[in-house]
Image (cartoon, rainbow, N blue to C red; front, side):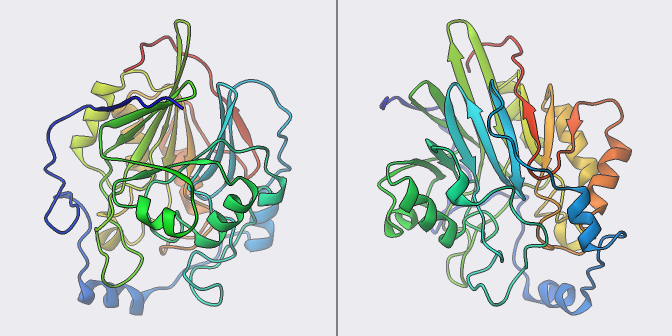
Length: 331
């Protein structure tokens, strides 16, 4: 393991005395939350849940060669880069909740079970919400891969240590760490964090830039995590001017009056694709849990309307996409 760690900026305006913030991030207002909850009416997919599952699921094929990404479901992806396997925001549970009896129910199964995973070298976590940091999944992964390296944003290491993780590295925005030929950089996101009533924004949230460099060839994969839109995100493109593949969320956006400060919608996803100068992208964070009010099949329909001829791909759960090299320098 390489001990290299670099802080790419001296500005820490997102730090507070009690935790973290972003001026554009979601702020909890009980009145607005209750207004949303009392008026919620989640419609099923137009074709029904069964047909939706049949349409958007395919058997996973882990034997395919070369660097690539498989979509496991929601924001969980499996990335093969430079011979290393990386899991993003793993959730394999039936509910995105502290309890498996209540909370958002999984409507589409994951592409495979934890027991079917290949050897996992890294896990990256974007933030601590239950649909991104799932205790049961982490416990099962640690049982299978006790020495896996887990990358987390600032403030989450102590949680993973309590859960039994032996190799956890936490980074602040713009920090980076190089391990076994891969460089992980934590990038800003406009979101928030909590797992209970009294820990709001006490842990940071982030996206992850994952880069491999062999000789003069660099590949860059950007896992966006959860974010709302903000012009400040353009700074990511300045620091990382050649993103080969971006994993961009497109779901959990309705109603906009409540969700716009938490999640981008498909139109904004396309906007960020352009502003961050992505060479290609895969849509994530849709089709699995009903976290907001739009039907499960609406995000993909809207993305198809907005993306035109961009290489912004809609995979089926279990589907895969190759990471093609675009010449760039490691930043």
